[in-house]
Amino acid sequence: MISEQDARNRILEAVSPRPERSVLLSDALNCFSARDVVAHLPLPVFDNSAMDGYAVVASSCTNGARLRVIGEQPAGIDRQLRISPGEAVRIFTGAPVPAGADAIVMQEDTTRERDHVAVNVDVNPGEFIRRQGCDLAEGQKILPRGERIQPTMIALLASQGFADVIIGGEVHAAIVSTGDEIVMPGKKLHPGEIYDSNSALLQALVYQCYASVRSVEHCADRREPLLTAIRRGSESDILVITGGVSVGEHDLVQATLRSLGARIDVWRVAIKPGKPFLFGQLDGCAVFGLPGNPVSAFVTFLQFVRPAVLKMMGAKDLALLQVPAKLGVDLANDGDRPHYVRGKVADGTFVPIGRQESHALFGLSRSNALLRVSVGESLKAGTIVDVQMCA
Ligand code: AMP
Ligand code: MG
Image (cartoon, rainbow, N blue to C red):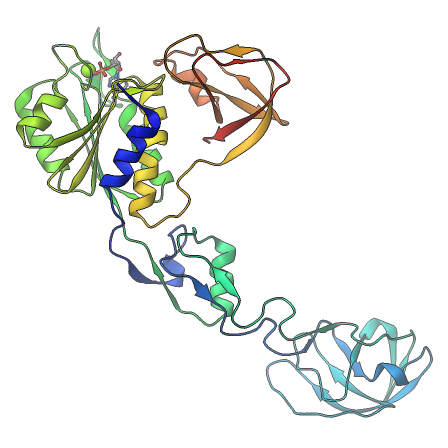
């Protein structure tokens, strides 16, 4: 049995980032940038008006001033207008500020009289002008390599005129569930059988990493079909097998992998739930063997598969989001493995949910966070702990 950290290190050493590619901005959502991206335009791009109103010289604009309107400056064209004290230019939101103007008076604070405008407020220099570069300077880093591209980042890249972006590689996953007792949802359940919930779970978890699922298949606990399923699955970048990785007579995954020439790098990890976890490599495919119990499959996916997938996709941050929370109950771990307690964070307090056993899917489905309790650790209610957000 090896430690979680050793297991994670071995897995992360074994996988490498997939080849990067250029995609249209519209296809980049939730991908990871493969470059440090730098602004090549300031934002705003030029000094412009924040209001519909009048561009003025503030010093000639006390309350009651009457200014001559010398022209109109709409958005979308630069009419290269210039004003002097005592003059104004009719201006619209987003339009370039005329030379000589140092403030905009909003329309609501003026009275228009044919070719003059009366100003009904005091005006200060700089008012309602959006200065070039005040938001973002040219040369400033806007997107670090390895960061996930969110909708607002897509907007920022578009504002720079980028039509495409270079991102990390794609990861295709194959999922194989094993077990003679497992039946696909939608089919009739006979005595002794249970529905396959892990395939659906793992597929969703792969999607949550923004990777794609190439195939999902179920396989009985027999050598031949397992050989075929593993061979087929190993054509993907990663293969996630669930069930059959333990030590019973029907647990054939490890032996089958070895007979195909796989190298097993990790087998049995000190983690609860999830001890019978396996990682190996077969023909360039990263193979993960997850325990069949749904909670164990969930926890081991998040702790071991997810960081590997994210690394392969070019992500920098491989850890789940950690947030501080107040512990709602006393918790202790007197076992011999770190325990990932499933629970819910609400209003800043973490409370365990449901049965803390590896088959207990209902409690897991109501949970949104994991609390790792180390071996021998005893935590009192009210303690501030860091929990991993998992929903
Ligand atoms: P195993 O790891 O194959 O020994 O399975 C451990 C437990 O997980 C058993 O109770 C199995 O019935 C259950 N199990 C295995 N595969 C699945 C699956 N795909 N969906 C739901 N439960 C499963
Ligand atoms: Mg089984």
